[in-house]
Length: 266
Image (tube, rainbow, N blue to C red; front, top):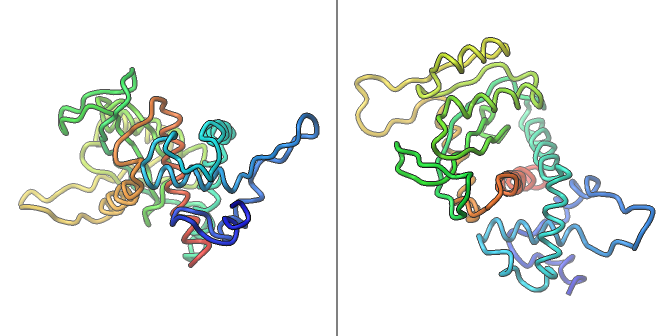
């Protein structure tokens, strides 16, 4: 079965040979001591992508991926090693260069999305505006909609408060990004003071006073499209995870998968 799997795609979520060639050098190298490692990292990545795309539970993984405990254990280990973050960021820079842009962005858009959370615990809150009990995804994207940063908080955290961690993360990971577009919810004194201190410019894109019904606003529609890309991966339609770091890794698997497909098959 393993030999057949390498020659044919069993599921739409499986890595193609071109995609695997891009990320294979990023996989952990075997240790010099101890028992020989027998796990196939390509199968582990395929299993995780299948889970995120289909929305199934860990125990519902098809048996040809191997024991679900093995897949879950390596998923947690690879997440702790920031492998999914690395795959996503490398694919993002390659996709930007393919589009004729600089690898590091200089402008972006920030927004948030409240989603229902299934798992009980301290990492849930009530968003009174959306009437949702769950978590809030604060994200920053470049001007083409590629995910740059994500911060997960309880849903009762305001947009401006969640964006402060976004600014800190952008400054470390994307130091050339200095201009951000946002909606009126981010026009708060504390956030603007921090942005000025960190040498950011936050431009507020407001709705016109005479607007009636739905209208596509410049810049802001890009981040809404990114939320749509996320929810095409059924595991992200709501937040099923007990742990914040696991939920964060699931988002990186999904968005990194989109970028890998675009760079490997332009």
